[in-house]
Length: 220
Image 1 (cartoon, one colour):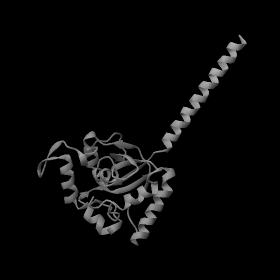
Image 2 (cartoon, one colour; image 1 turned 135 degrees about the horizontal axis):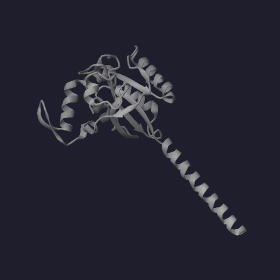
Image 3 (cartoon, one colour; image 1 turned 180 degrees about the horizontal axis):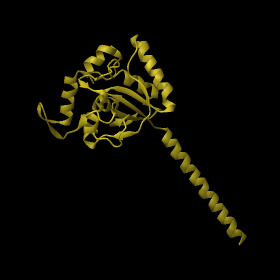
């Protein structure tokens, strides 16, 4: 009986150790990734830009900052929900730092435009950084660096983190989609339609005008 009890104690201890190791591994894996939510006008463009960055795992187009749960693209684009088009950038901090992501973001948008971005007009296309309490100081520091580099104030605000709602599947990875759609240029793949849209919207030209060689994505 004593041997059985001792064996049971040993088995329970072994299980506890295994569970502890699993928990530590899960925590370590979680700490390997971080997500920054930013609004930079058209989310297709932000997704396209940041999925090229080494250390970025995934970028998801979506909506944040409004009052309506689970908003649709049509609702957001009509300006009825208070949301902005945003991109959730998941990255590995060991490969690309939070500061690098923030600096690249601010140098990929028109930080002087508070009425939209490029050819896209309206509040839902304005810029913002949605920061968690842990991210706020770094976000504010990035804004300060941008202002110092430009020698003037910028309008991109640091806002409190807000619920993020992924956009419809149709919008995800739009910039590389091979599905053909009807555009004003005729039937095009999503990828071709995206390239024409980005060029005609003047995004890269304006970013180069503001940031010059410091623009990380203009022309990419």
